[in-house]
Amino acid sequence: MKIVQQAPPKVQIAILLDTSGSMDGLIRQAKSELWSIVNRFSEAKHKGVAPVIEVALFEYGKDSIPADEGYLRMITPLTSDLDQVSEELFALRTNGGSEYAGLVIERSVQGLQWSKSSSDYRAIFIAGNEPFTQGPMPYSKAIAQAGSRAIIVNTIHCGSIKDGVEGKWKHAAKIGEGDFLTIEQNHKVQEIATPF
Image 1 (tube, helix red, strand yellow):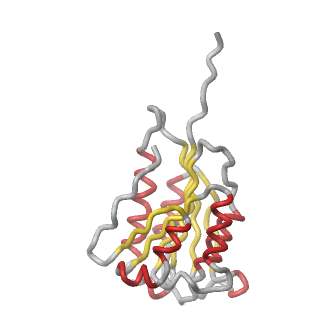
Image 2: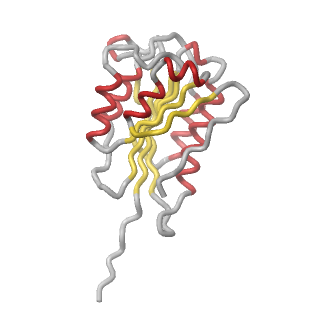
């Protein structure tokens, strides 16, 4: 009898980080918390098998990125080179402020090579501190696009829970079937459960 070797599960994560000037006080903590989420996934096992981790990185809200590009850019596509992603993430600096959450979600959904396998986990983690309602792309429409590809949208509001609720970060996570987390200065982000 031939034993078919099952491919390890794949975890694909897109990190979308607000690098606008208003993030100055929280950018370092946001980077650390985002990377700790990646590390938790990389340590997870499914039926004793470690998943293949692929991470993509986008920044948004930086005025030095042209307006016709939506003040956002993809820094790395989905890659298993986590050292490169980490290096790029921790090198990011803040500048300016036009934070289009819906647009950066749409770009990540459309612009990355997401797995189509039902056994793989696909998720977006978007972190920032301005209202989720800014920009030309309604966040609900962008999140619906993610949902059509079974991509979960998690939101990390860098500020108070109250501001996160009022700024629609909690609602975005709810319709994206993800978690709503908050980061406040000197407070640790809540734990997020891995799918395995």
